[in-house]
Amino acid sequence: MRFLVITRDEPNIEWKSQNEVLEEEAKAIWKLKKEDILREIWFTGVSREAVLMFEKENQKALEEIMNNLPLVERKLIKYQIMQLSPYDGFERLMKK
Image 1 (tube, helix red, strand yellow):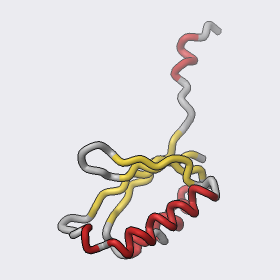
Image 2 (cartoon, one colour):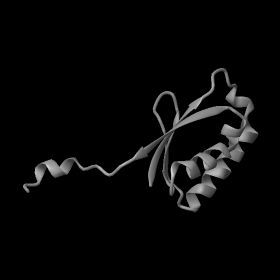
Image 3 (cartoon, rainbow, N blue to C red):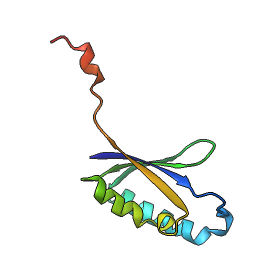
Image 4 (spheres, rainbow, N blue to C red):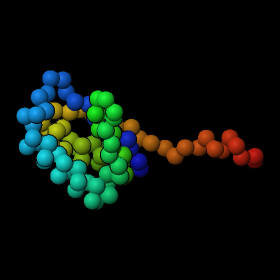
């Protein structure tokens, strides 16, 4: 199953003092990318919130992964998971 995850920073975090945990997070994200669990990762333009695309068997398995990420464990970010379904809008163009 495909999932879209959007993260949000907790308020009042001084990110310049979080270098160690940010490096841990980068290592964890790289591991997920190498395992092809994490398919894509982006930042939004101005607010720099992370947008991640995952492939996982179910949402519970993905929540376990997310909850073990260093930034989530330390309550520096929170996240929202959205399950994605294939787009079927082109069916409107097909004659039956």
